[in-house]
Image (cartoon, rainbow, N blue to C red; front, top):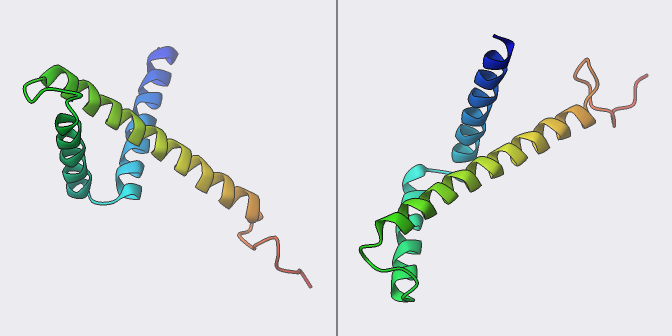
Length: 98
């Protein structure tokens, strides 16, 4: 039971990181148009054919994984930055206590 609960927590943490990354990068519509431009560029360079759906799907999955990794790293950097610069009571460390 504990393993399943831990796996579920990890799954939702990954979803949370993906959501954070999507928000961090910007609008999904902009990402999708950039993705279409990238696919078109690959086709013009003859790296993939126009009907190569398997390659497009694999590239899209790689894009999703990269966005999730970027989100995870950004989230951890922001959390670490907040924990490092602030005390428990929320007062910044650089403020002199009198």
